[in-house]
Image (cartoon, rainbow, N blue to C red; front, side, top):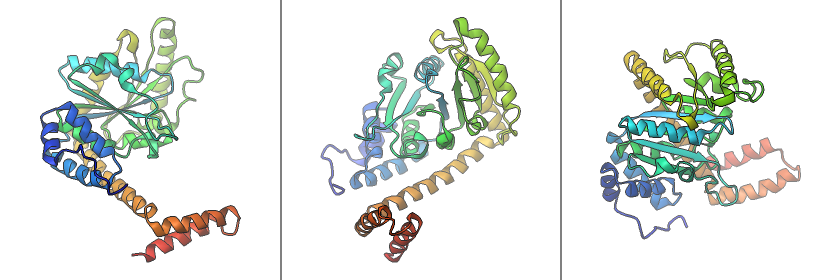
Length: 334
């Protein structure tokens, strides 16, 4: 299966030219190659990414996460429509939960963002999170570069939900937006401290109707909580605001704050510094992924692991000793 080469693949130049021309069909086909596990596609993907690299990086990358039921898809659609009206081209990379049976995406954001999906200035790409930390596909970084090369100047990365591993999306974006709800019990219980520390902006969504008063209270609570955290290296003070995506209230303010942030980090040099740091981290993440694939794809390792699994289950060897033993075997193979 690894040596199988699909017949419908184009030449590297055809993909590169199509992406640079802003062809959404070619972009989608190229992303499919990026996400593929076929060896022939991996080689092709690396060539595509390398060639489009000089045309990437010209966007603001925004990570968006939030508690379940906060209305991320509705917020992103209304926010995306606002950005398009401002003259921007928007790419939404929505990281869906992965089915443990089929390994495919469970949700489909194109069906949840119907108005935005039909616009030429918007591109929506749902992808399964797989086994990657934080629910962020290990191919999201490459996909982001392809979208930038295709002319999308605002990249929105929507993650599965809130958890400690959401640091993954923070590590590949410029601005981290956290959506929260009011009136759901203790406002600070539903989220981990680490996520709050990473947030550049907290937006209390669904602030409309009978929920306005509770939303204002929640806003004060979050403002007080954010003051406890140490100052960010970026020099930016996190902002808390209220919004109602369904009524299109407070959406423009979110973009205004992001623009203020961008101006600040451009002027103090943090934007470039952070991007460089992310590039290095990305390199090490890819090294780790390649080493993992090399290890688990080894025939000798697969055979040894099946034996060790039985020994561990029978309590004939400890998990720690078994791990050490298999790693030593792997090291001797080089």
